[in-house]
Length: 315
Ligand code: CUA
Image 1 (cartoon, rainbow, N blue to C red):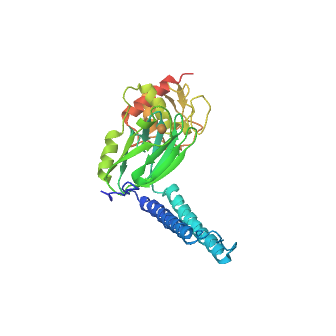
Image 2: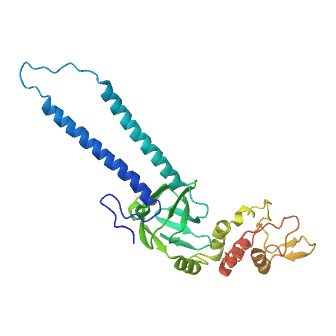
Image 3: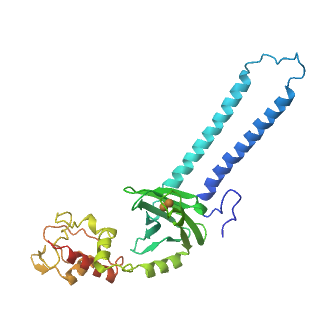
């Protein structure tokens, strides 16, 4: 477990947290020193230069160039230090390392959904491996939310119609609170979650099991519609008939396709399945064999769902 935290801060449990805290404490203690200095000088002068007799007047001092330079230069230097330090830390916090594990985070009233690279997803619990940078690609389904993990010193607004990014690397296995820090309606205070940091092996095991085929209560067709975007089919296959990099899904199921080798094939369940797992084996005439295989990143149930979805796209 990490350090126990302080009166100001919860325990620091991410690689960036120490840097954030250092800057915070620098500003905090500098402010205290300056506050005490200004207050005690004020008190001292009030007493020292108080009016002692009826006829006693203060001298007419209006300027002290040395003092004025001093109280301009010192704060300027402090501000420059804080700016440079803050900006460097800000960049570190906002630019995810290239090897980061990318997880999609979605905020909506009033819960979080996390989508993992293998198609697994989880709600409110964000499962991550320890000691590995994790990049969150975030967006909202409705209003503005904000993703906040105090122990990681990570906080980022989550917006509709636009992606935001944050990242962190957890230092210790454990559970850490997620809060929403943008008022988002009556359930705002209930919009709670946990980051569950696991060992690399535990994470891999969880991911395998959680590669949810079909979310509970969802029909195959609905799940297929979701997979169509989440598995990035949408990038190349339109559903409105417009040809793109690849054949449109509209009216495709049950049709006959001319293949690049001159033969013809009926688009049935087995052909769709083969095309997902082994896209290069039967390429449709007029298209480049550019589709990546989905072997290992899609389950049988998910293929069922995509097939069901394709069947629903009738011309
Ligand atoms: Cu979501 Cu507040």
